[in-house]
Amino acid sequence: MVTRNGIAARYSHLYRGVYPFIFPEKKPDFNQKNWQEDVDNRLKFGIAKAIEHQVLSLGDSVVCVQGWRGGMGHTNTIRVVPADPRNLGLAEGV
Image (spheres, rainbow, N blue to C red):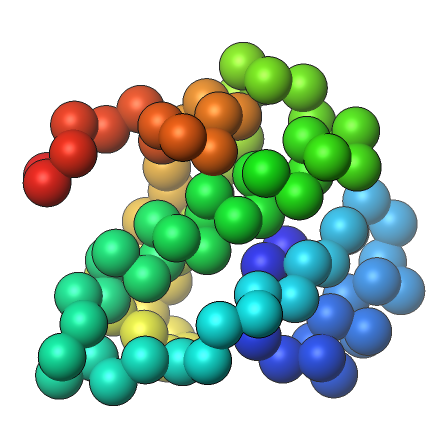
């Protein structure tokens, strides 16, 4: 789990199999930054941390759950990506 919220990270750590990583960057102004780029940056960060802590191995499949936009109640997308923080398996700019 990748989050900017320390409280959410602490609560999620109580559950078996959940490994929270706190994303260090502040939430950007989405009027100036692309929301999907921010999501991808958080995914890359989480995958890199999971590999560093040996939760994942390079090339493993990772199931990512996200919404079509930020906020609660918009989760409707599941992506399966390779565990490679340099490449989420998508063409750049798509």
